[in-house]
Image: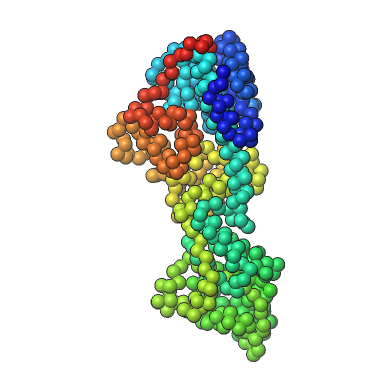
Length: 484
């Protein structure tokens, strides 16, 4: 008999088929467990069984199965309670509740608590194979997606940056093309977008890459000392100049000078910088003769230099000299498709730094990150994930580990303290609308949306196509090819 699982697997690449899928079946009926083993092993699944909730939870924690078959009614811990414990341990597990006594209320409660499916005994062998085949295929796709995600992250790293969105691919391409040739460059972008990372990439890929990369933060230098800091001074040039001092320009000889927040540079210093760029000479404060320098200059700003020029706050001739090459770094909001890559990059980094076994985020945390506007851009995301990784207890960062600025008030993922237009809607319609919002956040990818929502993709299809949550959530009619 050729079932849905084998057909789907055969249509995919060989790499898809090698991923093992483990099923844990928990049922106090030993005969049911024996049938599960007999039926599912023939489908290429690794099947482990337990006759008690405690033993079953032990298997789940040790084996980390992709699929759990769970009897609803058992002595001791009930199926609903065990469902919650399993999903709290591993939210990505597909848990299928099985019962001999179907009720609409229990089916809705099971799906609402995160069950992927709800089946009623007796289950036909064909139906069980078909259902488990679909879930096994989804599990293999998730494993393949995890592997491809790691490969995509590796392929998306450029110098110290990460990105695969079209706007970032353009930035990377521009850096590659201009790095071997530029003498001056201007990098623009909002605070926290990574302008210094772009500057460092330009430096490393340039002929001056082995020289010094010297940073001058124009907003942090006292105006009266700016010329001395940038160009140096000779002994006795002014009160307190007790010895000769090399300036940042000279220190960058043979390398690159990075002028961060160049819009904050005083006008008098701008004039002297322009002369240095034009002549490749630097004259220390109080010196009679200039010194030859060979350096590249990269300036960065988050301010509108064109407006500053109109207001006579920035020299137009210096702007044209610096902007021979211009690179605009996009905000995180303009490259939202890079958010999963960036999240993975930072989580891996902080997990290693803090020596924690963190391997990702829960679906709830992913929702919070996806819908936040990120006004502080990449720097804010980095700080948020550093904090969350410090606080996380298990292997996944949860929404509770994220700062209140993301989850509090309007960012409250549960919406418990917020009254909205949905307050008076039927619960079924609220659930359907929430599923639509998640689907939009992930760009229409139903598999990803279903994983975030904690339901099977088929359940998501039924939810989106139905006006009520319970419609289609009941069991399918039993087939005639043998009960389980």
